[in-house]
Image (cartoon, rainbow, N blue to C red; front, side, top):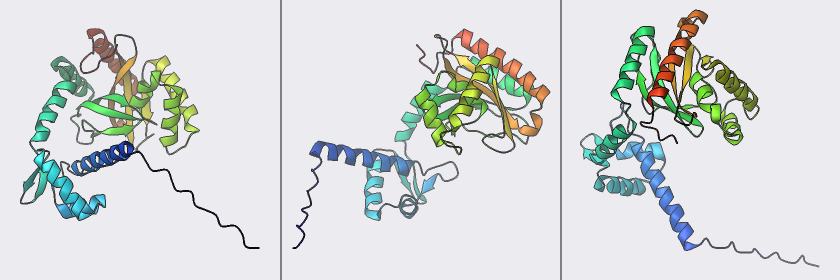
Length: 269
C-alpha cells in the first residue's frame, strides 16, 4: 500500500508591519555599514569598493549612496564618496556631549607628563569599553588608542574596574565572547574582586602581548563606577615599582575627579 502523502503546512505569513520593520532595520544597518567604511586612512570610497566590502548588489549600493548623499551624510568627489557636511552637525553635538571639561583634560595632560605613558578614560557599553578621552605619552614607543575605539571587556585593567557593579548575566555574556569561553567568568570575578579590594587594577599582556595597563575607578554621585582612568604602555616599562607608583597617582586623581563631580558627560543618578 502506498504511503500517505505528507502535506506541507504553509508557513504563517509575517505580519506586514513586522516585515516592514525588519526591512527598515536592514536598510539602516546597510547605511551604517557604508558610512563605517570611511576612516582616517580611507577618507573617500568608490561604489566599486563599497560593493566589494559589503557584498551588496551594485544597484542596492547606488540606491543607498544616493539616499545618504541627499541626506548630506555622503558627498560625491572625483575620488569617491567622502563624509558629508550633515555628519558635521552630529559630530559637533557628540563633541559637546562627550568632551571632558577643560580641567579634566588638563589633569590628564599632567598625568601623562608625570609618568610619560598614555592616559585614557573608558566607559562601559555592554560587552565593550569605549575610549572617550585620551592623552598620549611623550615617548616614541607608546600605546596608541583613539577616542571612540571599542575594546573587549574580557581582559584589561580598565575592564576589571568598569565591571565592579556588573550583573551576573553581563559577565556571562562577556565570558562567552572571550577566547576562553563561558568558563572565563570565574576568572573575571576574581579580577573584579581583586580590583575592588585594592582600589585599582592592572594587566600585563592579557589582551595584547607586550601591553600593560593600570586603572582606577571614577565614581558617580551614587558611588557606582561610571568610568575608568588608566595608564597604558609597553609592559617592559610597567615594573612592580612603577605599577605601584602609577596606581597611587591614578587612585588620587580618580578620587579628585569623583569628588569634584564627574557628571559631564555622564548622567549618573
